Amino acid sequence: MRPGKALRLLPRCYGDNSLLKRRGFILLCSHMRARTTLLSHIVGSHPSVCGYAELHQKLRGWPDLLELSAKAEDASGKTAAHRYVLDKIVHNLPIRQKVLDRDDVSMIVMVREPRQTIESILKIKAGGIRDLDGACDYYAARLAALRDLIDRRRGRVFYLDSEALVDKTAATLSALSSRLAIAPRLSENYGLFKHTGQPKYGDMSENIRLGRIVRGEAQQKHVLPDAERLDEMRSAYESFRKYAGENTEHHVFA
Image 1 (cartoon, rainbow, N blue to C red):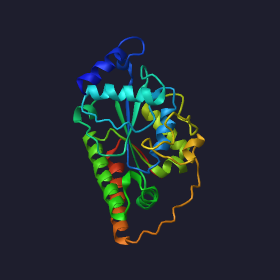
Image 2 (image 1 turned 60 degrees about the horizontal axis):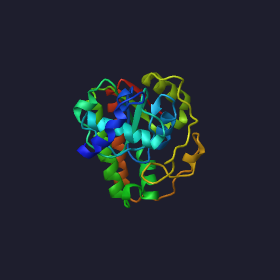
Image 3 (image 1 turned 120 degrees about the vertical axis):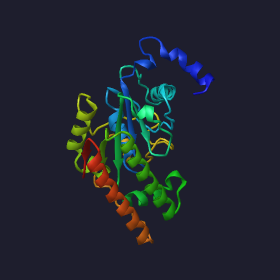
């Protein structure tokens, strides 16, 4: 953190609502178009959580965690004091081992099957990706990065299939609530925030503004010409799920 930024945050480190009084951190790690905006809104709407969106914050040590807490407050309108601070991570940002080793950090890893993910990325050109190879390269790189995070966390991860969030909602939210040790249980209904539906803050569709899980989403209609690349992604996905099932403390599959 730069000295000027540290000085600006210093006054927020004192008093009843000090940034230093947060309960801990929840890192939702995934890839684009995996329903992470939906899950982060559900978790971020809980009274024990501050934050609901991607905060684009490097996590190299406690100064970055302090800055993360301030960003979460500013975005959500909640104080971080006595709450868990949530960040959504769908790109490769530095997360140092000393952050991953912290006892007050909880990690959720969520992955969506490749065809729907890639079709969704291409439909809206998410992350500026405009072609099949770019989408596949991104997806494969994120799976590799998520596997590395599970390994570096030594399995202290809650893994879930993206599909489980909409197909097994009650069981998924109950298990996640227990894992995070928050009460009341997470609800499929959620609040809206000042950046909900805006660019750079996740899903921009009308569905995210409804405040509830929408089921029976229309399937994408893109024709993806390279079956070989999709087969590669399917193999990578199945390998990742097998690894997650064998190497995470808690997991929910669709």
